Length: 295
Image (cartoon, rainbow, N blue to C red; front, side):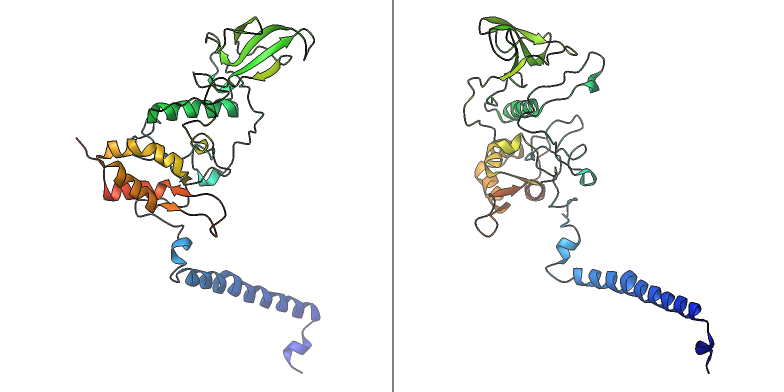
């Protein structure tokens, strides 16, 4: 009779468990990771395995901000769409703004407490559209936006609660001493909004205004993607930026358009999604092929 046959059964069970742990550790902890790493180096997979790195830095799959030290857009670069991921395109904080179409009323900051305010989705869109319009020298106006880049939203107090004659009207997103975008509404003088005041009993009334139905500034220039990391913009937004980039880099617009075309991807399977321009790759190509001329 050998040693194993004389061994108590509980020791045998423990030895079997230890053997299983050792075998699984080798397979799952060494063989599998090393095998996957080796497979990832196969031509055609290596780029994705390394995060689709760019020679200039970053990844072509994750957007980047092209801003100066003051946070202003650098004119010689195509600008990406906005991002709600952290401070912008933070892969560790990928997230959406979680604001919907009914987000139209701002929480106005109290004097001396700038962080106490919160912009509505409407005001974010209005402010971005105004800024893009100024950068590209086009009309940045949009429906339901004021000329100063906030939501054109009135709080209408009525003598019947939600119905009846208007007794008081406040421009909810224009903090005093701003001049309201309308002088009067239904015969009542419009007031600016006072931070901290309670306007909860007012009927929220967005005003469309006379902005064109199809704004010059595309939708993707004023709204963030769901994950906040999208490196793409629409061809329409790229077209809007082309004259500025060409001027800043001393290129012809035709040359910039050709480069934009090189980094425009088609629809998935020919029918899914829309055409998209990869801003990260496009800007890297511009720096590589047509660097900014320093005076």
